[in-house]
Amino acid sequence: MLGEGILKGLAETAKNFAGSFVSAERLTTVEYPEDRIAPIEAARVFPILIYDGLDWEAGMRCVACQICEKECPPKCIFIEKSKDKKADALGKPQFYPAQFDIDISVCMSCQICVEVCPFEAIKMDTDFELATEDRFEGLLMDRRQLARPNAYYQQIHPTEAAVVDAHLAAEKAKADAKAKATADAAAAKAAAPSATAPKPADTAQKPGEGD
Amino acid sequence: MFEQLDQIFVLLNHWLVGFLPLALRPYASVLISVVVIIGLFPALFALTTVLERKGLGRIQNRIGPNRTGPFGILQPIADGIKSLTKEDIVPSSADGAVHFLAPVVLVVAVFMGFAVLPMGRNMTLVPMDAGLLFFFAMGASTELSVFMAGWSSRNKYSLLGAMRAVAQMISYEVPLLMSSVAVVMITGSLSLGKIVEAQNHYTWGFPHWYIFTPWGFAGFVMYAIAATAETNRSPFDLPEGESELVAGYHTEYSGFKFALFFLGEYLAMFSISGLGTTLFLGGWSAPFEFLSFIPSWIWFFSKLMMSICVFIWVRGTLPRLRQDQLMNFAWKFVLPYTMLNLLVTALWRFLGPGWQQWVYCSAILIVAYVVMARVGMRREHFGPRKYRYAE
Image (cartoon, rainbow over all chains, first blue to last red; front, side):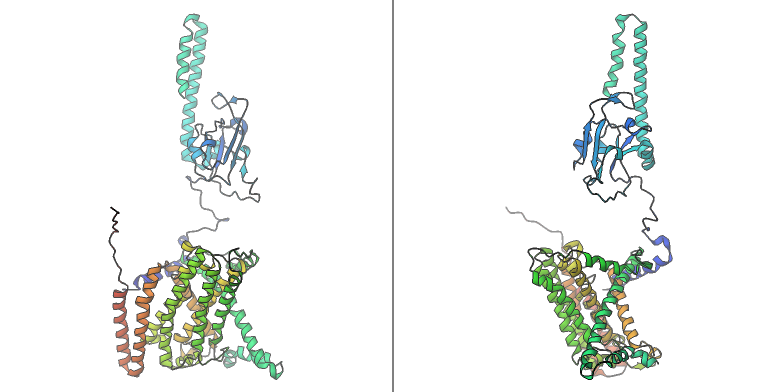
């Protein structure tokens, strides 16, 4: 009959109205600044740069390859490559970003920079309280402001960080093994007659190129 | 004691006027009443906005505003300061004069309606013989201001909103009037004071309100539907459907002019609830005879606020209608039903007191309701759309 659904709906909202005074678990919202909902692991806000160890400048994973800068759809990333190289976590000499800026007023949180980064250097933050009084300088983050220790990353995205850490550890183990093999080969070369020496060194070099 | 409390505002008015020379007294008396009405209803509006926001919050299992003052009761003051300090923007292509006049016309026309409402015993500003007619004349002129706003803004959303508003308000104006005519047929008077007096009797302590008769109940339901549509309240808020039209006819209004539109909308709600109270709910009369000692104005305003709460409740429950559903409902169901209600009212009048009038009138109305709902509101099933391409 006409109007039956309306009456049912009115009863439902009346139930909500009365129930929200009685039971606190009915309330779907929390009073934000005082109460907070626990952060959701898969949440993403703006990108951050991860560094290993304690010194943010020395441990920066970013090697200024500029892939993220090129892939960024709204072009909010600006990178200036360093002139010199310095050793990364694997001990390999690499470039580092002399300047790395993200304009978070332009960033659209698409996470493409994270997807394309081959060095696990850029990740998404979950911190959303970024309001500022200066909408130009206050929203332009430089590399110091973007740098976060790996421990922070492990804390905000535990599952994802575990995978990344395992991957990096495997890579480090491989690099160590390779370095050891090279060192062994060098030692063998020093010990053995000079004519056979170049061969093992070459074979040891080859798998390393693929990584 | 209770007599004096009942007439306290009338006595206060007399006392204040008494300080003036005799020649000025009638003017001063009217002036005081007007100032009270102009002050009281916006205050009630402020109260209603916070009530609505908190009520809707609770209906949606939220807490609602609670930051400004204890329990958020100072929220309307914050809202008021915000709208007063906002920049007043007039689009460069807008018709300046009409754009400025539209909110003024709305608020003035709505305030005029309060002039004839009996808000308590002897508490009518203008006890007019044709009060109901005056009220509807003033209520109809709000359509003008809505269209002025939409047309002068020179914005397609505003214009679409105004077109919708005019179509809707004119469609629902007819059932609104028709359902009120039933009351006039029984009372034999267009004077709102007389209509209240006619309902202010008691049998075994129960009142003779028109809502407690079959035709009165049907008329009240139809009146409530038409009044909701007339004041552009949800579920009939198509003219300002924010998901479709930004804000409808007041898209191009900001700051205080927007606040005036907002005020006008709520005042229209108050005045139409006040009229509904007067016509069907016994105006300022008490719901039981033994409660008659409570001042009449308390009853009027509590009935008014009850209607406002129902408005809010309905808003929190129902989704917005589609334009064709709105028009179908008005012309295929509400209008025929109110017309039938006129016939039933006439039958009630001529059957005279007795059990027959109750049985016959109720039977006709219930059967008609079922049949009309089945026939008029039948859902039409259109099959999947077929396309025929040009050869």
